[in-house]
Image (cartoon, rainbow, N blue to C red; front, top):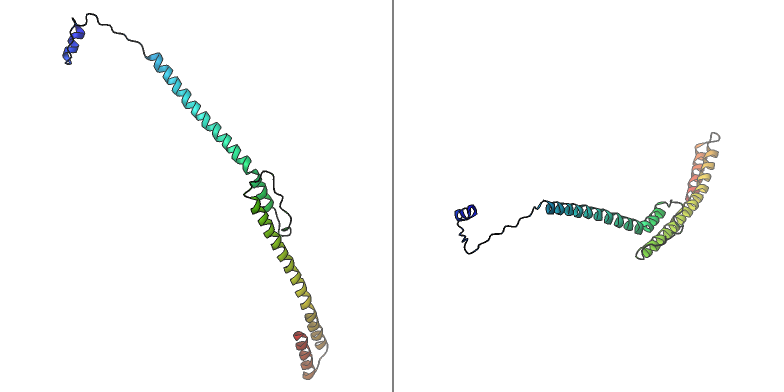
Length: 167
């Protein structure tokens, strides 16, 4: 009767004669909610662990695949200006796309080393060619200043210096 009155208060009509028996089944939801909360926590922790493990595996894979490139970079950086034409040792596992680049770089360094060698030879020959006239000028000047001379004698020595400079 109390339920009947509550239902009538909200506007529902319930005819007890049509339903002679009313069965109310209820269950405590606390264990189900606890199980759902535990499953949600397990799912969150599992997701975080999977992401961390995936990040670690991907990081290791990328680092190991870049090891040959790092080795090649170290070889190039370790070259001094005196040993530009030493060959580059291509590390195993280098990507095929980088092999032509490394070979081209080695060719370029060989050409630079050849140019530097020719430059050193030129400087050596030029300094030799300059030493001879400079030595002659020094000798003539020293001879002219070795004792007092007349203006004509100094002029003759200066003319000799000019001729040595022209040669």
